[in-house]
Image (cartoon, rainbow, N blue to C red; front, side):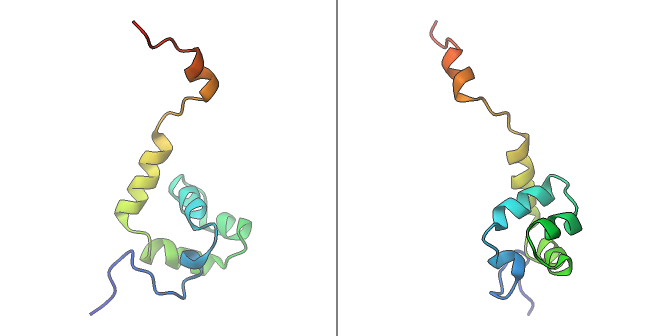
Length: 84
């Protein structure tokens, strides 16, 4: 029986990278695998395998939804008058 998609093996450079979440967010936002691999000094083949085999569709969707949420800065929110 094979591993479930999204499971970690312990040897994957992507899974073990200290900036894993940041890398996955960049890829979900549409950054290239080669460019991202270069930026984080990881082999692009390993990063491609990580993205395909260890990042589930649900995790990818979560990253995309998280990127689409509007953010209100603290300055802007403090200026907003929320009282009736």
